[in-house]
Image (tube, rainbow, N blue to C red):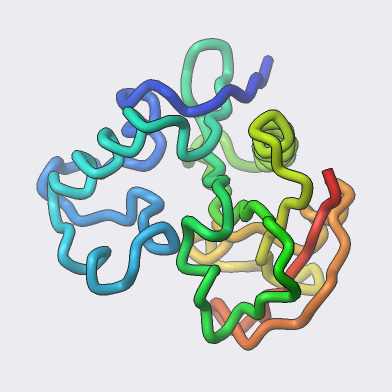
Length: 188
């Protein structure tokens, strides 16, 4: 397995990792934390993918992991100011620093358990740094080694972020699948 991580620029590749099996399905497409709730809920079916395609035209909204030429994973990364984290009631704003956020790390079924999430997080760090970010935040789960439901593991785990050099800087009021989320930062 030869994993590379590149900025997400090809819609077909993003669709392979994030898109639905049925074109009319209303899957997340990693828009939940990127769009205000009302706008996110109003986008259904194919309109969700069309929105992602329009985002790609403005620049990469994240990074993709490839095994050879096959897209096998995704990490969303963007300035916090362009996400709902900028006004979250459950995830605190630590200070007024111009930080970037990484909030979704998804590995396709059949490719999990091979360390791809580590590659994705490293790729998100590199992408944010290349875009001029000086601080990158994540909001992973503090699962204390316990198993997490796969559908809720997309935010990553504290240990994944620690392995990438992030440090916890705050508690949050956010909980997923019974596990608290923590706010972690890495100075770039």
